[in-house]
Length: 396
Image (tube, rainbow, N blue to C red):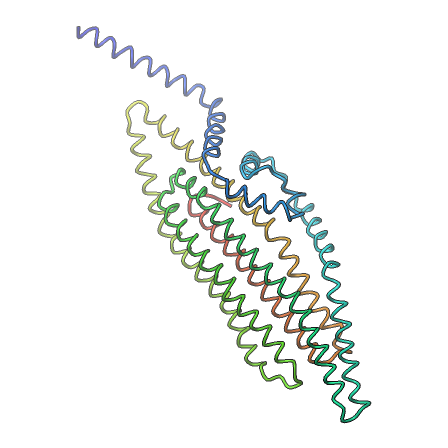
C-alpha cells in the first residue's frame, strides 16, 4: 500500500515538473499573448461610462476633437493608446491650432469695430464743449456713449467669464470620472496605499481649489472690472489703488492655491510609495517561497503588475488628451479676447478719451487674469494626475 502511494506521489511530481518545464519552454512565445490578454481583461473590467458621456459632449461642440480624436468611446481611445495606434503629429496639431486661432479672430473682430465707433463718437461729443463754452451737452453725450460702451464690453467679458467657469467645471468632471479607474488599476498594480489615499486627496483638493478658482477668484475679477468701470467715469481716478490691491490679491491667491496643493501632493508622494514598496516586496517574497511553483507564481504576479501599470499609463495619457481637447478652444477664445482689448486700447489711444482707454486697459488686465485662472486649473489637473501616476509607478 505504501509502495503504491509512493509511486503515485513520484508520478505526480514528475508530471508537475514536466508541466513547469513545458511552461518555461513556451514562456517566450506565449508571454506576449498572456500580457495582451491581461491588459484587455483589465480594460474591459473598468467602467468608463462617465468619460464616454464627457467625450460625447466634447465632440458636439469641439472642432479640434472631431478632426483629431474622433474615437467611438474612451475605451477605444485607451486601446489605441496602449497599442500605439494613435498618431500624435505635433506639426498637424500646430496647424489645427493656428486654424482655430484665425477663425476665432473674425468672430470676435466685430467687437473691435463697435468699440472703435463708440470711442470716436464719445470723443466727438466731448469736443462739442470746446465749441459751445459753458454747455454740458458734450459731457452728457459722452456719458451716454460711455454707458453703451460699458454694456458692450460687459457682454463680451461675461462670455469670457462663462467660458472659464464652464471649462473649469468640465475639468473637474473629467477628474472625478477618471480617478476611480486610475485608482483601481493602480491598486491592481500593487500601489494599494497610494491609490487609496491619494485618490481621495486629489478629488477633494481639486473640488475645493477649482471651486475657489471659479467663485472666489472669478468673483474678484468681476469686482475688479466693475470698479474699473466706475473709476473711469470721471477724469479723476479715485479707485486706482483699490483696483491694484485686488489685482495683487488675485495674482498672489493663484500662486498660493497651486503651491499649497503641490506641497500637499509632494509630501504624500514621499511617504506613501515607501509603504507600497514594502507591501510589494513582502508579497513577492511570499510567492517566491512557495515550493516548486513559487517562481512561476512570482512571474505571473509580475506580469499582472506590469500590465496594470501599462493600462494605468494609458488611462493617464487618454485623460490628458481629453483635457487638451476640452481646454484648447476656450483658451484660444480667451487669448483672442485679451488680444482684442489690448489692440483696441493701443489703436484708440491717439484719438479717444483717456477714460475710454483706461477702461479698455482695465478690461485687458481682467481678461489676462481669466487666462491665468484657466491655466491654474489646467496645471492643478495635470500636476495632480502626473504626481499620482509617478508615485504609483508610472512614467509620463
